[in-house]
Image 1 (cartoon, rainbow, N blue to C red):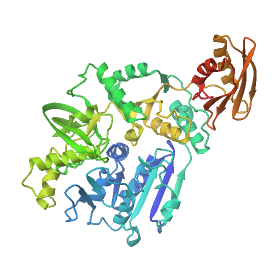
Image 2: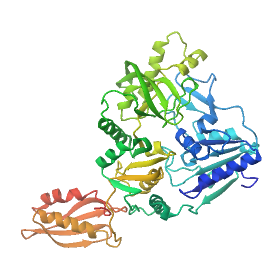
Image 3: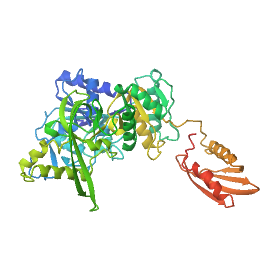
Image 4: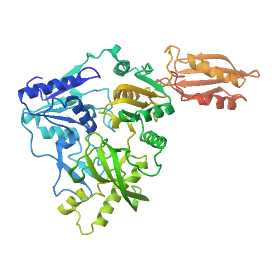
Length: 537
C-alpha cells in the first residue's frame, strides 16, 4: 500500500486469497503496533470474518453500524423516529479500518424504512465523513468480490469501483487478485464456481455452466432436498430467491418436523429480519437464534389508515421468549411479534410501525412526545422493540450473503424465471460461494448441447412430437434468426404459425400467419410452448 493511498481496494473471486490477504495485513499491523478495526456489513459477515482471523486478531470483528453510530440525544429527534448519529469521538489518527464483504456496503441514500434512522441514511458517505481520511493518516481497506450480489434495492455495488472512490476526491489503490490458489481439480464445487464467474465476466448467460458430480455438486428434486436437509440441518442452510418461497420452505420443514402449524415451539431456529437496539443490546437483520423457552402471549388490534387513506386492521401479538444467539451463545429474554412468524412480508410495514407507536403511547399516557424522557422510554420499551422474526430454516440469498455453511441447498426457481441472465448468474454465484463442502441444486434445468446458429433445432422436434399426438403433420419449417415459421397440415388443410424468441433464447409469443378452421385448436396446442427456454428440455 502506497504511503499516500487513502483507500485500498482488494477484489477477487473465491479462492484467490482475499482472506489470506486480510490475515497478512493483520499480522503486519500487529507487528508494527498500528491500531486497526475489523468490520463487515452484517453480523453474519462479521462472525464469518472472525472465524477466519480470530486466532490472530487483537480486536473483535464488528458491524459497520456498531462501529459508526451511537444513539442520538439531539432535540431534532421526533417522537416517531429514533435516530442514531455518527460517533463524535474519533479513532486513532493512524488507525486502519478493514471492511470485508464490502460489496454489501450501501453507497446510496435510502429512505426511512422504519422508525430507525442512521446518520444521513447513506452508510458509505457517513463512514467517509467519520474517518476524515484527508485530515489524518487513517487508511480504509475494502475487500470483496464484485461478482456477488449488490446491496438490496441497489442495482450495482460501487464501493469496490476505483472510479467511484476517485469521484470522492480520494486517493485509491486497487489490487485485483486473479491467481486461484486452490486447484480446480481439488474441488468440483470450486471448479463450478470459477466457471460461473468466467461466464459472468464474459457476459455469457446462454447456458448454465454447472456440471454436477453427485459428490460436491448434487441435483435433487424439491422433495428429495427437503428430506435430505432434515437429516443435516445443523450445518446446512436452504436458499431461495423470494421471501414467499423462503416462507413456503420454512413452513414445509416445520410440518415435516411435526411442529405446530399455529404456534412457536422450543428449540426452533428464528432469524431477525429488522435491526434491534433494545436496551443497548445490538442485534442485526439476519442474526440467528434458538428458542429456549416460551412465555405468555398478549394481543392488540388497531385500525390504521394506509397511504390511500383506507382503514386496515393491524394485529400486534406479543410473545415472551428466551433466546440464545446461534453464533455468540448469548442468552436473553425478549418479546417477539408472533404474528410476523407466519407473514410472507418479512419487513415491518408502515402500518405496523404506526400501530407500535400507538400501542406505546396508550401504555405511557404520562409521557410527552419529543421529550428526553419519551425518547429514553421508547428506547427501553420491550413492546415497541419487540423482535421482528421469521423461521430460519431457509433464507434469501441476500440474507445468507456473508455467511458460510458446510451444505447449501439452493432452490433454483426464480420469480421471473430469469436464471439465465446476469442477475440470475450473480445470484447463483453468491449462493454457491456460501457452501464450504456441498451444494445441492434443486430443479436444475437439464443442460444440453446447443448450436447458436440453429437455435430452434431441438425446439422444432419437440413441437413436431406434440403435433403428432393430435394428428397434425409439420410439412415445413423455416428457422430464421429470431423466428421459427411452421406449416402444419391436417385433412389437406395447411395452417401457418410463427414462434418468436428473444436474446436470452426464450420463446416469447406465437402468431398465426394463415388462419384456417384448425387455428383455434392449434393455438391451444402450441401456446404452452411460449415461455420455454431453447436451452433446456
